[in-house]
Length: 249
Ligand code: ATP
Ligand code: MG
Image (cartoon, rainbow, N blue to C red):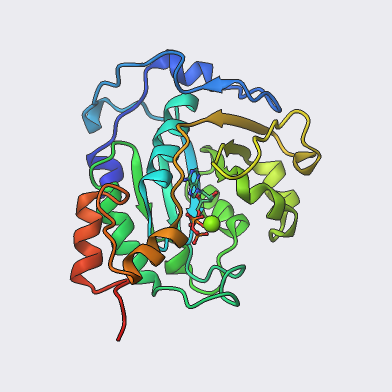
């Protein structure tokens, strides 16, 4: 059974309603304000109808707890039914810069990392589609599958600068809500005032600041330093089993 059905938890109605109309431009949704009890529901008890789905895309080379903490807190703050960790097939903005770990390996690590987190689902949608990975295509495909779902595209603050170069970005602005999470090393983003987000329905979410990057993890692994606790244990196991990121020569 796919994890999205098997391990699904739906936030309580109050949270869903609180997040139902994200206030465009207001960077005011706090993950700390009201801890909510999240009760597991059996499949047969899951509410039918449109779902609120987060799309958190990345190269995830490799995934780390910074990604996971951002994803679970965005889900909580906006009452999302689930957050898809969408593993880029060909990260078109990065391929010129460095060799990218094969998509199947990155996906396997993300699957292991997401396996213990309620509401996070590893997605191979861009790998299955093949070719360069454009979020606009992913949004269209998800809408084709479930036309009534409300989609939220989650990005870290460091990505805001590059948004204007995204493929069919106006289409994304029309069809999704953009969610910006804070990231150490990048100035905080206020969607209400930020000219780079003009035209978007955007909301800012405050998440615990974790100064972790995949770049740092690749360097750590290449120099024999541990990834433990920066990457979930199950994911570290997959990295070791597959011999990824290891020191060469
Ligand atoms: P790299 O160093 O290779 O660029 P990365 O750590 O930035 O890797 P990506 O796969 O590039 O990871 O990022 C995917 C998404 O996760 C982006 O939207 C990015 O802003 C966000 N993100 C990555 N790390 C963090 C973090 N520590 N806190 C919040 N958001 C993060
Ligand atoms: Mg990055």
